[in-house]
Amino acid sequence: MIDTQSGLHPRPITSIMRSSLDEMHCLSRKPRSYLLNSYSDFQETDEIARESYEATWLDLLMETRPEYKRTCFEKDSVRKESYESKQVVHFTVRRFLNQTIQMGREGEPLQEYHLPYRNILPIPIFVPRDVTQPDVTREPSPSRIKSPMDTETSLNGLCLQKREVSSITEHKPMVIQPRSLDFRASSLISPPRDTLGIQRRE
Image (cartoon, rainbow, N blue to C red; front, side):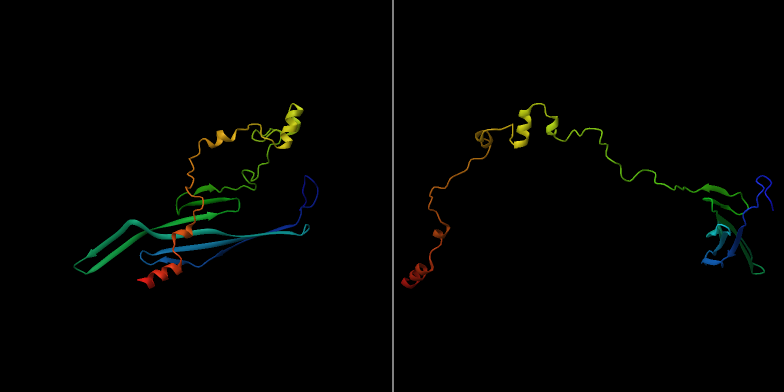
């Protein structure tokens, strides 16, 4: 087949679409609920570029379960016969490769939803610091100080706001000095020899 617009032969691209039906699983016995899964495989091959693409996904998911409060029960006491019928509902979920999903009941139009997809982060993780704005909390460097005296003072590490020692210690609590400077804790305990001598005298 020749393309009429470009006059070139189209690239030989082979596309294969397959669907496989999985077994039906019984989710619960009372009430009975069944789940049916169907998988789809898509394969595309470009012979010239030697490229291929293959995808496998869960295409169809159908769940069958009894509908709530939809039961018909008949009983014949003369013939001793009874009849019970429960209405079931089929929930269907379909997935597609274009990031869309369809959900709904069987027999009704399915509602389509678009899944959120972004190939980039919404916000950068690391925000670089703006170096053009001056830092207010940082002390000025010597090049920004006006007078040479301020430059020398800032380099020698002297504190400009000095206070007297008396003004600092006037708010401290009063320290009580001991009466005797020769006070020792060992004087409170009698030596062991004196104690033995007192016991012998008694």
